[in-house]
Each structure stands twice: as structure tokens, then as C-alpha cells.
Image (cartoon, rainbow, N blue to C red):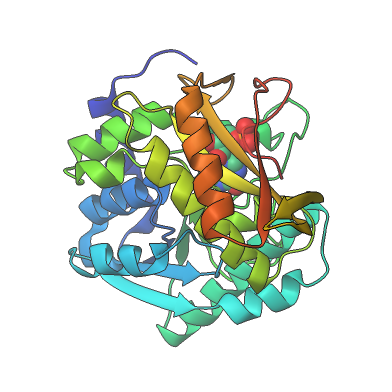
Length: 316
Ligand code: XMP
């Protein structure tokens, strides 16, 4: 894709949104991540209070993340609604182990919740999403093979109640989306956030997803982000994965058989290809001893040293 002028891109998108939407209303799927937040800022610039943002809390967010998102957006000039839907998502995910299945289920449930919420709000013609260019490519949207279905592309059911879908960022790579966010005046800590998959920790819990496993992962992930976050020069993305493996260990002279957590930290320009971050050994040791020391149900920590390709960033 050729380099594009982002000021032109913003102007063009604003015009297109205004022409498409007219005097109708738009409902935005706000996850609190970079993409949907920038999407919210762009659309609200185009159509103001015709935009309503709904944050579906699917219960697969990181530690305290739901509350932080609610706090941040309720201060902004847009209509913000938080839907607490964790129980509903977990019920649908019960016993599901296939990553593609998880993505499809979460994608469909997302849309169902939006349909229900939009009905409560009266007539809303358009659904907006923060889909970016790599989402489309990796979901086989152009000519390539399907690597995986991103929740905001592959999971869409056919019988949507909305008149149309608006995806103003679908021509942009991640770094351009951040620049657009800055140009639109979003706060730095929001614009510089690490990417986070739409299906959230559901794709970082290997195998079936339960509330208990999510809680374990949230705590381990918090430690990983706290420790790596202290680095001056941080990798572009870093997080924990709850593997579907248990391993023998020994704690206080007792044999244990507990969870194995993996740490992923990648360096990249565009997330299409990535290298493993050469984290200092002392940092990895600190992460490991904190995780096994603070979370009794985890007994082993491994570091993922694989590049993308052939591995993806997310384990799934
Ligand atoms: P992969 O795992 O494909 O991830 O190497 C590339 C980047 O995309 C993020 N990612 C997602 N972002 N919706 C998103 O908005 C998704 O469903 C999704 N899945 C992966 C991933 O975290 C990485 O930064």
C-alpha cells in the first residue's frame, strides 16, 4: 500500500461518513483499544452526537481494564454506554477449545448485544467498527488465505439489523491509526496503548475459557506488563498466555502439578512480522519469580522466543 497523507485521509473519511450517514445515527463498538477509540474520535468529529458508543464488557479484559475504559470515556464528549455481559459470553464459550470457534462465538455475541442495545436506543442505521487494514488482509478479505478470523471481520453474522457498516480506518496500518488519533487530540496513554485482540484474553487462554482461568491469566499478565513496562525502551507488545499445560513442580517439599504461563514480548514496525524481544535475563527472572511467588496455581513460566512468521503474535 502506498504511503498516504493522513490529513487528507481524515478529511476524506469525514466527508464520506457525513455523506453516508446523513441525519441517521451510528452505533460504535468501543473496546477501549487504539482502533475503536480513534474510530470514535473520527466519527464524532464527522457527525457529533449522532454517534453513540457502546462498550461491551465481555469479561475477557485485562486486570481492571473495564473500569479504566469506563472512567476514560465517560469523561469524553460522546454518549457512552457500558454493557456488563461477562456471564453471557462465558456461557457461550463453555467447553469451546477451537480458537476459530472462540473468535466466531465472541464476534456473533458482540453483534447480538449491539443489536439489542440499539433497539433500546431507538432506530440506529449504522454500525461502526475500528477494523484496520491488516485485519482485512489476515481474514482473507482481499486475495490471501485466511490466517484467522478477526472478531470484527470473520465473526459478522449475515443477518445484521443495521443498514450498513462503517469502517473508516480500514485503509490504515496500526502506526497510522495512532498518528490519526494524535491528530484528533486523543490522550497519549490511549493512543500509545498496546494492541489488544477484540476477543481479549479468550484467545490468550489456551483451550476452554473459564472465569477461574481468566482470573489467573489477568494476575500473571498484570505482573508481566508491570515489569516490562519499567523498561525505558519497551517492546511493541508484551503479555502473558495461560497455556493449556500443567507441569510438575516442587513447592515447600511438596510435589505440585500446576499451570504453565508463557510470556510473549515482540518487537515490530507493523505487526505483520515480528521478532522476539531480547529482554534482559534479570527481567525474565524477576517476572518468573513474581508470577510463581504471587500466584500459587502457576508453577512454571516460559518465554516465547519465536518470530512472526512462522508464529503469530497471539497464541490462540
Ligand atoms: P497476530 O496474532 O495475528 O496479531 O500476529 C497481530 C496483531 O493483531 C492483534 N490482534 C487483534 N487485533 N482484533 C484486533 O483488533 C483481533 O481480533 C486481533 N487478533 C490479534 C495482536 O494482538 C497483534 O498485535
